[in-house]
Amino acid sequence: MAKQHLKQIRRLTQALMISGLLNVAFGGLLVYWMYLEVPPTPYCVLKPTERLQGHTPLAAHHSISEVVKHFKTLSYPQLVTKLSSDQHVEDGYSERNLALAALVTFHHFDLRSALSGYSQPSQHRTLVYDDPADRAPHEIVIYPGLSFQQYQAIIHYADTEKWPFTAQGLFSLIKKEKEVDPSLCDTFFQTPEFLSVELLFSRLNVTVGRHELLKMLSEGDWDQLSAFTEQQRAAQDLSQNRRRRFVLDYLKKGSVAAAEVLIKTDRDFALRQVDDRQVLALLGSEEVSSQEEVLPLPEQEKLYVVQKGDSLWKIAHRFEVTILALKEYNHLQSDTLRPNMTLKIPY
Image 1 (cartoon, rainbow, N blue to C red):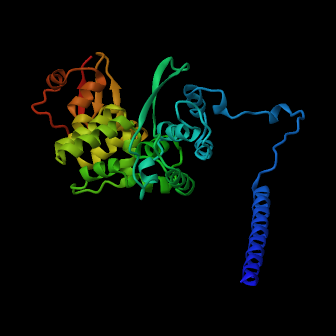
Image 2: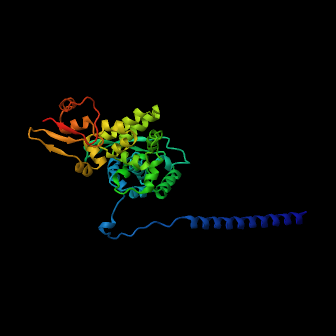
């Protein structure tokens, strides 16, 4: 019995020794692994820097208003690069929040199309800032709740899309460019604003081309086109009177293209509405002036040879006399005029 007890004691002692050795080994491995994971102690080397190399981030010492006013001066590509910056500004906003707001506000960036396939911004905030140049408060819309994936989609859209702008942005580019890129026109042709105008002229017997309509629209302003689109969205008025009012609104803006469209689509109505300057521009002022004859008479009276497209209203307006005086002076029984007939113009 004593021998058996001694054997058991030896076995237990050996087991304890082996267990202790294993614990020591595992402990050593753990310490070594922790040593490898600890980052090296940071250090810096102090050395002089050149003046141009000492720039600090804009957002480091500037308020939101100052950053926005700076971003307003940046070009479209420069603002796109800022979309990757999460540098904090203030009130929880980052540089990329303000860069996106500047793109949407100052460059009419199409945020809705950029986030196609993603959820649209669930919240936005309007920031009011002062611009010393205008001496008036301005507003800019910030979208603070966008995720990293949404910003990546925005950057991809901005980098790959040739015309990543809203209809207003496309319209501004068309008015600004002397030679408009055909692809820019094609993109604008797909906007709801242009399609609403095209639909208004779609029921005519004559065809008014897209570029004819675009020329007329570009001689107006965006507010005029936008207001028309909203009205059509509510009323869907495609009547002749609505088309006439639409063209006349552009005539009041001095649009020669509108006069051309009116002559083409509604000639009789145009002859009663278009003034002399627009008629000369349409028919060719040099050709008209070479054909017309205005002869002075001794009694301070003038003779005028009627041209094609003339009316009593136009002639009276041109020589600053009344229609009634013109009819009575020439003993006219009606308002009808024939080309090449001669009228006396009272002094």
